[in-house]
Image (cartoon, rainbow, N blue to C red):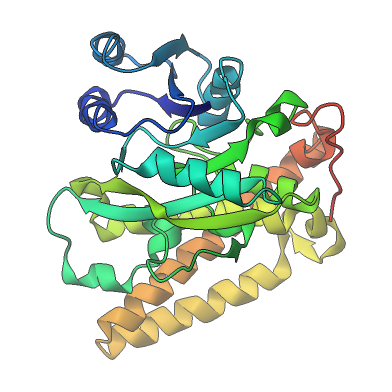
Length: 329
């Protein structure tokens, strides 16, 4: 048996469409269970979930504390079976999705993490400049050319990943200090967990035949939205990859001085591209500027917390239990 786990908040209509797609999913051998965690919705989410009882093997949990990782941690208590499949409330599964993940988990016994393919489902036709976008960090889409083979943990994406349940039974949990919680947050909800598992020796496998389609909403197809996404991505990148090194670097107001130099250089590239009317180059430089801004924002926040005597989450290990000691880089 396996359990599908997703968190949702204030997306009642999209969730209804997604659950309709779940009604067409083929059951894997030994069956499956669907756990939906409502993260304090104020719309008709509860009524939508109730309408699918009897049509799906559905278990409902309410977690009012804001934060996707709080919701996922709450849902882990309802998991049954040996495999936990994580997805999002705007990801539409293909009919054989669970069969493909089940087959991969039963075949590749030395792997603990399985990442499926994430394809786009455009709400409206995308503008031409979307080809300039890094589709992984912006829209959480996988590379369609990715082969079925071992894969780096940061290339397994939240809308389509499966992890062996025994890791959570040993006490592993998501870090609630990172990931979606309102509109102001560092990205990296699932990546933090996957990097931690990788350090412990748990490896990932890509499953190209296990496909979900990630809804790309119309409001996401604006440059303003994409550049805001770059800031959140930069914040998460700094927290995941640079925060433990920041105290060793020369800083100004908590921000590594190197970041200021990189920001100045990218602004110059952006201005030059604008002056030469090179739209793609200008867009890419604007993305890089906001990515670096995000890193600077997170560096200042972490430095401020440390000056206040707060312990940085990566040093606390509130997210691992017995037998899951974390090896810090």
